Length: 293
Image 1 (cartoon, rainbow, N blue to C red):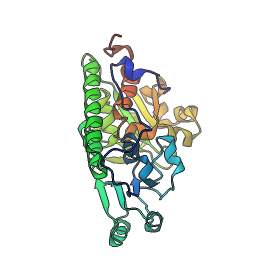
Image 2 (cartoon, rainbow, N blue to C red; image 1 turned 90 degrees about the vertical axis):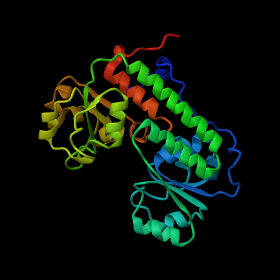
Image 3 (cartoon, rainbow, N blue to C red; image 1 turned 180 degrees about the vertical axis):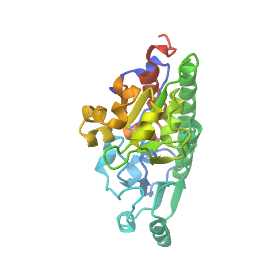
Image 4 (cartoon, rainbow, N blue to C red; image 1 turned 180 degrees about the horizontal axis):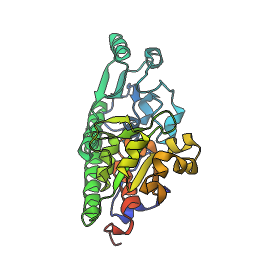
């Protein structure tokens, strides 16, 4: 899906900018920070604490400046050497970071690791922001950012209040690499679908699990939701639409395939309301109660 410029403004949302300003007042000037998790890195930048970042993981792809930092590896397959070589004074990591043995090895050197909980709700995203801000000594900035996120989420909920149709959405990940993974209950995919006013076609399933072509066809969703990385891995949208698990559904026949940036969609960080608003526009279109200028 092509992003609609100004969608946040159209819905009456302020959004959260990523400032290039100075560090927050309470930050330790000697802090050397490694951030393991794309949403956590976004939060560090949004707080204006990016000058203290000495390394990030491979999921830290936004903002683009994060690409210029040393890469310590994939969030679930971290090498201790890659982290420790940067001499961090603090490592912050999402709760699926690992392996556990590597985290224990890093801690054994005296390097503190703070695991940040990840709950796939607006309140979870707000608390994630506040947690990171507290760890960095940026409490005031974190409180303001979390408040803005909650305010925008309330505005989006108001825009969705009059929408009667709640289309079913099937989220598939890593299609083309074996059986695709479907996003069931208690996943970030489920959380963002609900925030956007949709119904998860796989809500009866728990977590991310292989979704067979039969399961996708039986779900017969109104829309199929994919990440940009999944589509690129398949060779483009035409290749996606030709796949049986998509072509034989109502959404596939009608071409209702929504494609979004993976971190934006699933990160549950500062841009989560932006992601939900973008998905809501794709699902509901003119049925949204758009704020008048």
